[in-house]
Image 1 (cartoon, rainbow, N blue to C red):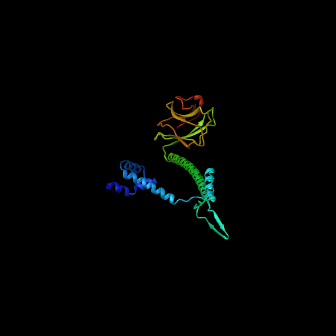
Image 2 (cartoon, rainbow, N blue to C red):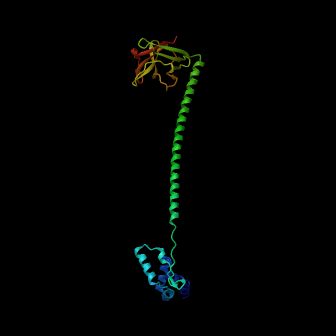
Image 3 (cartoon, helix red, strand yellow):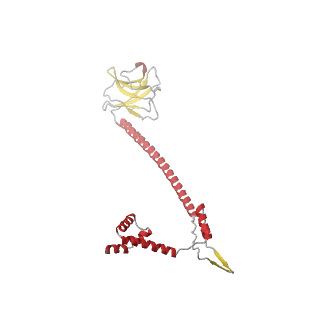
Length: 282
């Protein structure tokens, strides 16, 4: 009995009647009321008390206000201005009727939100433009860095080539041989450096004077050793983009050097009627 009375005095039943309880609390109250008559009767008394209180303090709106409210709800276009309190006139005095206690809701300031949205949209567009512009600049910077790296590599290669050239002039073991054009190509000429000690053979590509050839052919250098031709590798004609020197295959002894025009990739033996230059090593 004490537990039931304590449960009633806890205030949970009043909250239940007002609908201010959680689903679990509602279920608990209903189960308690089903098991205990006192709780069930207490709920009924609370409901009657609240209903009586509501009726005692209710305000009956005027017929004019009732019509305005109903019309506003029907068309769904109610204007807050229709809820202003009616006024009565008595001679020179003006006073409000205290019966209709309806207060007009304040209007929202939608202009502020419109300007705020427009400002946010503008800021977003400016940010997007800035990001795109920054990305474009980064792309240009990457392109410039790539070009600078290529130039740096090209310069490094040129420096290495110049070092090789200087080594040739410093090394007294090198022989500078000038191959002259043969009867079928008298204007042709080629200069090469050969060291019997290091066995290196280097062509001077800048002084190269050979007839132009198509993409299906290349020039091939030969060394004549005891009257037999030895393949020294292939190369293309003069080109401004080529290096100033080109190292060929190595050989320790040679009686002469010659160049013939061969199919791309070279041949096992020289095509004698395609010989353009020749020169001895003595």
